[in-house]
Image (cartoon, rainbow, N blue to C red; front, side):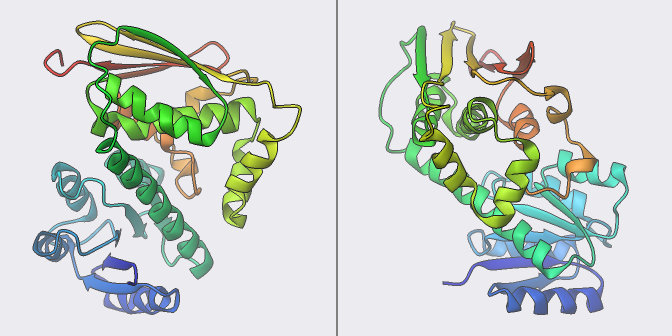
Length: 299
């Protein structure tokens, strides 16, 4: 079955051009001329679309209003959204990212870049849905757990530990993607030393997983581990994640930066801070992050 996209744009010529590009890429495409028409189509077919590609400035309901509607609907809040718009000022970009658009492109976007962004957005969304699906199979009852320590090295172990921490935090659907993001960051950027620029290139070439596995097999990284401490009280779960890397300039990654809006990655920490945790704080040189999840009823 073809991946189906909903394209939302009030400019007919741009809509027709983009539709043809998307069809050439192998996607099935439906269209809407403004946010209100898009919202009606989404409400009428909740599971009908894999991604929404939308303009920002539109009549009746603009892109930001549509984003807010999507994020407020439990059935649609995880649907990936790419902003494709001529509103390319830093404040426009920051507003779109802060309201839940995971990717932002100015139009007209070159076909190769548009395809890379869409493919990456779909991959990220599938990873989140996979984690949430695994939660339903993860039956361990960790409500009585008060303190635990873990160490791990691989991406598979990071995913398994994310599921466990999410269970222990008593708010699994909300937190699992955030834990996964931070644990994977600790492996790739921390212990394995893959820089932001290197990851950008690896993602463009489709070699990120291959490079992570290659470095994990090298003797230089063989003994490096990520250490995790979980402390839980009746009111909150606090998790401390520490890698053995050199640290990084974490300050610019905890917020939505318009300068990185067009990259294939770089929003995970900011998204985790907003969506998954009640508090997220990096310490020292950046190789230690502490997150807090308040127990439901104490928020």
